[in-house]
Length: 351
Image 1 (cartoon, rainbow, N blue to C red):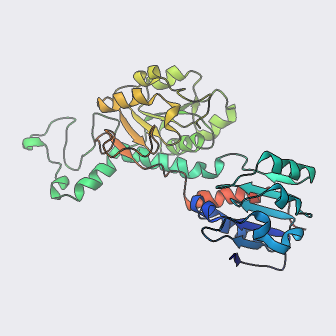
Image 2: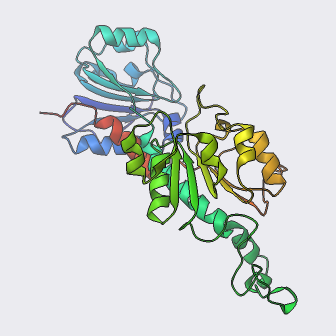
């Protein structure tokens, strides 16, 4: 059995062991975890090569009895494995592909091992919120559509009035926005946000900083959340949607949030409103949203959809009133770094 061992240090009390499938999901996280522990004095680091599904005990070998701090990232752990860790005091067990089962947790509890998990999904909050802001600006200015058009020829450069006749509120020199939908600057727009958690609060603060008039609805948030987001607190969701020029529902998907934005809410959005989706699509009624987008009543800027991947013939793809990315908002290297940092910070400092 071949193991790849890297960054070995004389301090063998801290050990990170990584499955290649974990790297396939979080390609920057394990190495950053290693770098953080190296700053604290040292770490033994094991990366299983592709196709190696060794159990945790096999991966660490005869060093297992010395390990006090462990980050097991996607490597298979069993009751027998964990029983061999006579010195273990703190640990992280994160997948994929393997996660800790109840029997293993019981063994660790009996050994009084502290097990750490991500305390929230804040590690990718900045990445998702910034992508939401980028999609908003792209939706307002039609940047993806113009990017595509410029590759097909020079007519895109000419925005002279049709037939040379200047008309109010119509195309003109360098003016290429679609005035049927929310367009132009974010400054001055009525931005309406649902949820002021890790993602929504950041997005709201970005919009506020750029001069938008921001209101937010979140019945579970405390008052300081709205202050930090730069948002007026709206207590009624129905009122929030009634005057939105940009509508950004930014909630996680769970039993309480599925379809929390109903068909009635979607129908109440003003004509021309830009809807921004970067968390989960099924927090709203996607059938109602599709109907209004396809009817050219509202526009859409989305990173997430009800069916993924979108079929190539999906009617949302390539529309003049839709900008889209393929569910990439959260997975930046920076989110990987933050994920590792949030976990590493929970371990007790080495004295």
